[in-house]
Image 1 (spheres, protein in one colour):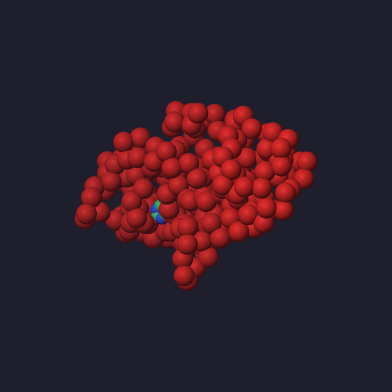
Image 2 (image 1 turned 135 degrees about the horizontal axis):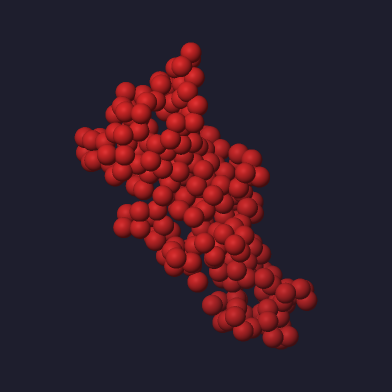
Amino acid sequence: MRLDKLLSHAGYGSRKDVKKIIVSGSITVNDKVIKKVGHNVDPETDTIQYMNEPVLYQEYYYVMLNKPDGIISATEDREYETVIDWVELDFGHAQLFPVGRLDIDTTGFLLLTNNGQLAHQLLSPKKKVKKRYEALIEGVVTEEDIQKFEKGLDLGDFITQSANLEILEVHAEISQTLIHVEITEGKFHQVKRMFEAVGKEVIQLHRISMGPLKLDPELALGDYRELTEAEMDLLVPYGLE
Ligand code: URA
């Protein structure tokens, strides 16, 4: 890997910034000053230092974000702030992208990574990765709705796979219901469309888990952190080495 690329990915600045650092003679590779920006290094075996401090290089990043309302699940956008803009200060160097999408007004668990293979596995329809949501519904959700969700709903362009719907709290006096729903697909506006199909409306939607990963209750809306070792172990069945 080129030295300038490695430094840039390790967070030492843009390619232009790191070029200056290298040319200034502050980088050593195996204790030898290297001033060639395109010098080839192997991050596994070479010892790379910046002003006598080791350069810590990480190829892949896995970031859990408790997505707030009002930002979009995209890498860039002209109009709206994206989830990638949101984590830019800490992970701007890592070329992250969101694993799947949440609507602009949906909050909760979103995984950001630069590991395309993992994202592919988690999003593959064949893997049927479970996505669990908590939602506040306009209307009183009934046992009949639970059965309809379980059987599959005809949304016009497709029939949903069996979904698990749980009623947590019914507030009949204001006609609202708090529920949990678990789906294995990830079609556009899927949960909102499923409730529309039974004559109800989603007021608030918050994702609480995706596959084996659960939203850390310590993360307030808008907070994010890298996955722990234990959480990364849970991703081994999805191809994480
Ligand atoms: N279903 C929706 O309707 N919206 C989301 O953001 C996620 C699932």
